[in-house]
Amino acid sequence: MEQNAFVQSVRKSAPRLAIYFAICIAAASNIFGQEAKLLNVQPAIIKDGDIRLYGVIRELPDYPLFDGTVLAIQVTASESERTTHSRRDAQGAPCAVCTTMHYFLVNKENERNPEVLYRMAPGPVTYIHIDKKEYMLGKVDLGWVDEKPQLRKVTLLQTGFAPPLFKRRINIRFENPVEFVSEAEKIADMAMRDAFIYTRPTTLRKVFPPEDIPEVASGLE
Image 1: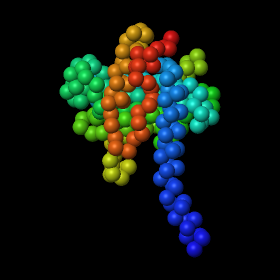
Image 2: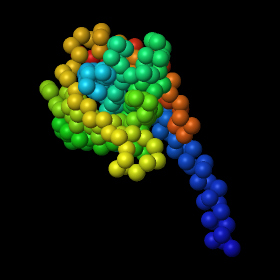
Image 3: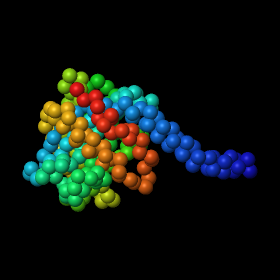
Image 4: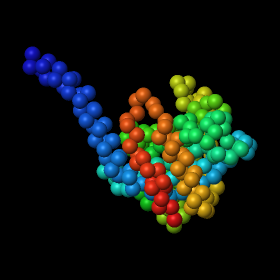
């Protein structure tokens, strides 16, 4: 009887503990996300030149749940004539399906293939629509210039319940970083606005980065 009572007690407390843990993660993300630093914005072209994208790298300061550096990486559709249908349809407004965003852990110096933080993402994870198909940010290949990460190659993975063998992949190779700070910050701000209007039923409250997007974008040298 005592064992059954203990099991029932654990079952009742488990949801509360899960909620408490989620709140702790959200609170920590809010505090440490406020100082996120924009490191790089890099252009890329896919679909035989039909679509122009940008890769964005931000660095979170010391994040308490991990030993290493957490990078928030985005791939976003441009506002040029060569862009996705979704970006065109948005007509300059934030677009929930125009930017994919995920988080990666760099736990050693100049690491090329950082770990994807699938279960412990410290903020919103978003998706991008290309040719009416949804993709998520997958594997990332980094290069390092003066101890600063740059995107060499990124793989977008099609979402859905189909077997991995049948899912489409888009391999993206990036060019050198955008030179002008004002242009880079404008692109990064656009991508973050996209991320903040995206809503998924199971996601936590979006706490990274803070609401003041222009301040988040500052720090690019």
